[in-house]
Structure formats: structure tokens, C-alpha cells
Image 1 (cartoon, rainbow, N blue to C red):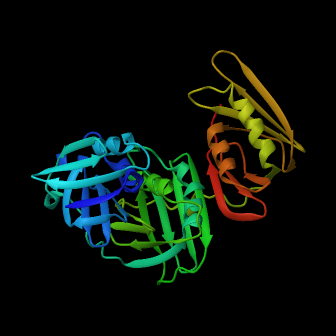
Image 2 (image 1 turned 180 degrees about the vertical axis):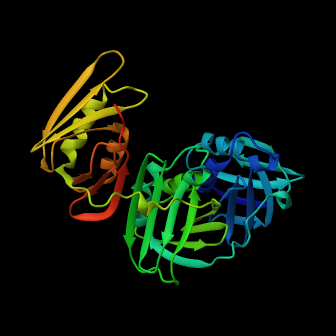
Image 3 (image 1 turned 30 degrees about the vertical axis):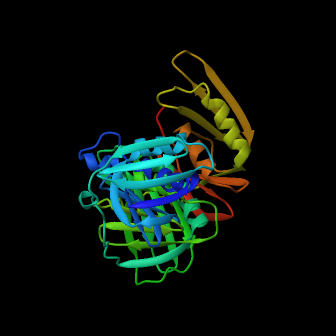
Length: 366
């Protein structure tokens, strides 16, 4: 294997995929990247056996070949080289040599044949969606995913594909985020898959605000997302996601309508003196007025008030303020609507003029 390219052209694919390489590995080869040089250029692959990332680059290939090289060392070398220099990469007697100007690096390698690859995911459904819209869908829901929960099916994001709708749902058992994207996705009926947390976060990092489309293939055990110059393949979480529709409150008779920015700022101010562990705030609702109260074990207190539109009787209810703030951040409309039933039941947060995104937060006893 032998090729020559600009330092930036080599750094881009290495940097794009190296993030999924774990520092502690069960197999030594998982600490390596697979380099495959062919007639169409260079393909760089990283995997942790759960997620596989492939990034491509146009390089001047002089000799075709495949080999695996240490990911962290290679990334550090590429970063340390000066900008704009040419890099010559060659495989010779089991070592990968990088030359640039007066610099020379020789890296140990492992055979490409031992590198675990996902070949065919046996796609059952394929569709395309604008990259910016998919990234936005994930951004508005992924923050509600659980992290290292024993209910492993909560440590990911539910993607539900129907003929005219793509839906993302995430929950950690205390709050739920649900967002819809209306478009034509074809296929027959509905399909649900649970994408692992790590893969969701990688996709958010890789996707941009561009309008170009990404291709999504869903198999029984894998999802594959292909965009310009990069492809992510991930195992799916094998489990049954909760029946989330039953969690979404219906028929609440207490409706709060407020400026989203004003409510966010007031909650944020009160949160400064909330209990650092439990993050609880108390909301006192009355006609045209919302009072927000917080206190902590140091006997410090915060109190804030804003003007609201409110239908329903007086109500006092407690919430984790972080959950409220994250839900409000995910909405981008000027007004927000919060629907409540009583102090013991979850609230529903949405925008009055747009119900494509909905957020459910369970109350706290304070």
C-alpha cells in the first residue's frame, strides 16, 4: 500500500472515525483503524463491534492495499504535522511509514483480515431524509435518553418509520421527548428500531445543517446511515420500548401559556439556588401569574415571578428544573404551552401553534 496526500485530506477521515475507538479494548485490533487504499481512494474504518464508522478521502493511490494501524497514535501524528504539508504513506515489511518533509514515523500494524467488519445488514427498509431535518429531530429528543440504565432499552432513541412520518422518542423514565417529521418515506406499515445512545451522539456530531440527503437502511439487527464521505453502521438495541403513547397526558384542564424565553430565564434564575442533587423547583400557578420557588440545604432561597395566561384553578407543583429547561430549549417557538392535571400527574410541554414536538415531565414531591 502506498499513497500521497495533503495532511488535511488524511486528517479529516481519521478524525471523523477515531472518536468511537475505546481506550480500553477487549481485542487489540479494536484500538486500530483499517486503512484500505483502492482505485477510488482511501477508506478509513473504526469499530467497537457495536458501531462501525467508515470515512473516505480522495488520495493519490500509487499501490493498493489494506492494513490496520493504531488509531490514537495516527491521529496525534496527523494533528502534530504542520498545515498544508504533503504526507507520503507506505506499508513496508509490516510497518506503516508516514513521511512529511524531514519528519518520519513508523507505526506497528495488525493484519486487515482480522479486523471485524459489518458486511451486509440485510436491509428491510430504505429511505432518504434531509440531513439538517434528521439532525434537528435528534437534537430535539436525544437529551431525554437514559444513561447506563438497567432498563437497557431506555439507553437509546426509538426511531419509528411510517409511510408519511418519521418519529423520534426518548425517555429515561422521568421525562419523555417525542418529535415528528412529516414527509414521504414509503414502505409498508410502521417499523420501530432502538438506536443505541453512542450511535445517536455520533450521528449528531457527524451530521450538519446542510440540505443534502442522507440514506438510511434499516435491518433486523442494524441501522446504516450514509452521507457524503462517511457511513455509520450500528447494532440496534434488542428490546421492547415502552408504550410511550400511554405516557403522554391527555385531557389536562389546567393550561399555562407563556413566553418561552421569559419562562426559561425565570426558571434558570431560580435554579441557581435549587438543591444541587435533586434540582427541584416549586411552581405556584394562579390567574395571570406564575411564581417559581427554590431552596437548598444551606437555607438559601430563590423566588421569581412572571406574567402568564392561565386557565384552571390555583395549583402548586414541583419539578426537576433541569428537565423543564431542556424541554424549553428544544422548542424554538416564541410561546410555550404547559398542560397540567394536578400536582401528582405529569405535565405536557408543547408549542401552541405546533404540536410536532411534545415533552412530558413527571412531577417531584418537594
